[in-house]
Image 1: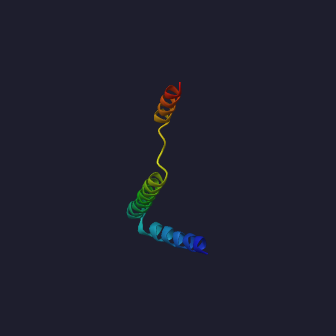
Image 2: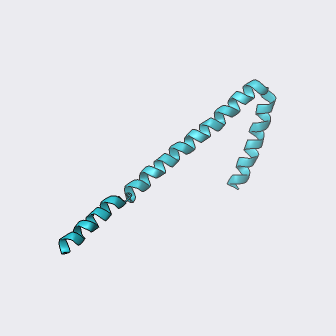
Image 3: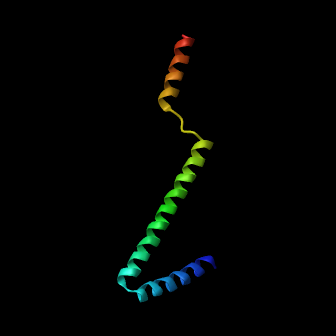
Length: 75
């Protein structure tokens, strides 16, 4: 239902923007699209920060070096 509501509201918004004229409607449409893109980028950055704190990336070089040192200590 939420998707259907969004489609209908988008159609109404598109019709209103067309009635405003190409310059004003284009500026408002551009602002809406760019605003949604920035919001999406902000949310992706927020998700990345949360995930990176939960599971920090492993440093493969450091792991290999530590494993090498352990092997050298055994011999």
